[in-house]
Image (cartoon, rainbow, N blue to C red):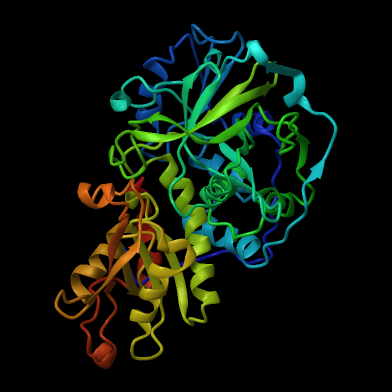
Length: 495
């Protein structure tokens, strides 16, 4: 463990270069980095899920593409573990040598602060229209949708690396959000959306009106748009417009024949249909991002499929959740940490050094905030803002605030500071009745049954106590100069 080191972050002068437009161009870039492996002949019933779980928990394993999958549409493929190693930097358009904290800071500087947008552009055609299933030809089971987890009881989820396109019935705002999608039969899929999410707000509005909600499910979109759909994008902002700002050009979309909703012209697979009021079927169980089967099974809305559009040799982008840390936690940590810092600073809080939404907590349950203390109560203020801002509010658990000599992205440093600089009796604030989710494993079954999906938060002040911070014991470690000298002379011993 190292502390008191300088946390180097890039400046806004670093130029973002997103060099791909769709999933196939992304694959070429990942191949150039030497981070793609191909597996042929593995089945969707068990093999693909096994490989995915094996490769998702650390940063080093490659992206895996499954081909020649038995009992599925000829030429169809599945891609998993897209966000890891150097390819995660490439995905966001930054140098591959950046650390995860540098990558998050670069993303924040060029994305969340200015939030440049370029509106999406409607075009008449695109590769996604190469093949269309309608009427009796509709059969979503032809695609090689895996059973991702051993405990899923045979349920197949085509929507894990997907995002859903919905429209606000009041003002026409288009939202792209990531919600799990289960295959029921040839012509219907289940759509679970947690309460409070933008897509759920849209769905509830249609339900209240007694109207069917149009929806398009993008299976195999480009990874950058998927990441934005996973993130806490502000209300009334369309994710494609942010992606357009990142690329410096508009995202090209076509309009669905049945819903009129836009979807990317170069997507791999798009499912178009309607959620009819009151139409529900049993959904789940499905292993979720907390590492548990916390939501069990219950009736959830069904999408009545009207068309499936797909490219030749289509690719399912798979990003199923597993016990953290996993792939989902890695990509959400990068983006969510940037958004969290931006939320805290926009609340007017000074002195923030860096923040991190930790992978081990699924990038939600454990937040670290590093700051330079400037006044009494500064640390407590930072913790409460982090726990209750837009990014931190949903299904949080612990916020640990530390001094600026601690790297909050290092779990070792964060917990060391908590163990040595906090006092359980005086350093912990508790917030009750906070926004959580049915996926939270710690909510009692009887409260879930009553619709009470709230939890509590612990805000831990792990900074040197303000009133005697200058008398706090000195850290037992070499100075930065001595450590640099040691690395120069004896660094070969670490390789």
